[in-house]
Amino acid sequence: MSEYMHGASRGSLAAAREALGTLIRAGDSDLLALGDDLFAVAAVLDREGGLRRALVDPSRNGDDRAALARAVFGERVGSAALDVLSWTVRSRWSSSRQLVDAVELLAAEAVAAAANKAGRLDAVEDELFRISRIVAGATELRAAMADQAAPVENRAALIEGLLGDRVAEETRRLVRQAVVAPRGRNFDHVLETYGRVAAELRSQLIATVTATVPLTEEQLGRLAAALRRIYGAELHLNVQLDPALVGGIRVEISDEVIDGSVVARLDEARRRLVG
Image (cartoon, rainbow, N blue to C red):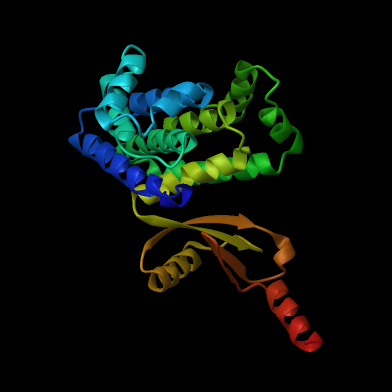
């Protein structure tokens, strides 16, 4: 998740994640409640500029900032969230907005850890990807969910109607968060961020595979094995169909694209002829 951070914030996020990891490994915290609490903290910090600036103020020492966080949130969130927040604000942050980003990422990681503990992390990753594709292809739904003038309850009800009882509870929490508190980002971007958090929890890369026809389990297995050899890491494959490719597949991993489609080969041939 360090790609979301700049300067001193990179190291601070790593330290906050280690603190969260220690708490998760202890196994005595309600991780869904912890995620909800941290999302609530992020919402307050996003709204209260003076508070978030005070919590990153370098003229205050780390203990002072932690004491301020406990004074403000002590009656609002549980002890686990309060501990994570205290650890987080003791570190240096490049900007107050980066602190809010970090708290949101920690909240998403707590929810993903709950899914992992319940054996549902694969399902949550798949559901987040599938839902983002559904919304991306439904213009009116996308516009309604992005309408910040509409009451939060209305937008929340809209996504609840879409999800029904067909997804994991952790997916429901993350998708609802993406709808009610996008913080200026589009829905797809927020879900992609949460998907990366879930994948990184298992040190996986996410590979988005675009194909013209559905791939068999055997084909997916061979593709995953080949990508593991190339990248030296486990990968989670998100598969989508696009008949416009004509043939072959395209694989996107972070900012890298491996394009083996017929369209790509034709484009390359044209470039060589023109050149």
